[in-house]
Image (cartoon, rainbow, N blue to C red; front, side):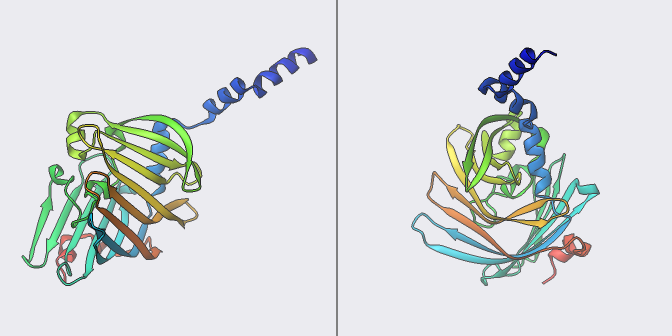
Length: 268
């Protein structure tokens, strides 16, 4: 190769077009980004104390204290979670058990102590409010990757992190009905592959809710697993907001299997 030809190639690579082309070749695809998001939030096991604050449109707040445990099964394809409400008195003893599957509809059970009865939440009910909050049952689960089409909209910072901005659109009307959204847009940290912000659009295409996360901690350094300690969901249509603040979070791969049974769900 002559010096002249080498110089021409070098200049092409250093030009904006050449740099953009090189970046396009190395950047992950939108689906790959969301696959990494799904993987990054999966911990082998964890235990935590969570304070859930529910605020109405007049900023009146109600607080609920919850314990939560999670554990992976089936080689990481299923995440089981249990939430147990400690206070206040009107929800004390209420428990929610979730089997969050990778490729099929999730199983959810709720135990209501006043009725001494466990009720199963069917797929059509996953859009319902989680214990009176602005989070739905579906919002707290890991979406099935194959249910959506993905598009990289832009790249911009949010919350002090460089982010990919990804549109996730349901592949069918049935999936949109089940999710309760016509589209979701995520701001994904390029460094942590954790969701920093989310916009959720209703079935008419209007902005319904905004998710903001914060204090994202590395809980499993070996496998690079992160979890936000703060999540807030703001309903842009009714002015209400709900906040989850986690404390005393422990990476606990040996969390007891008995926690994730309907028998334990009903134990007072």
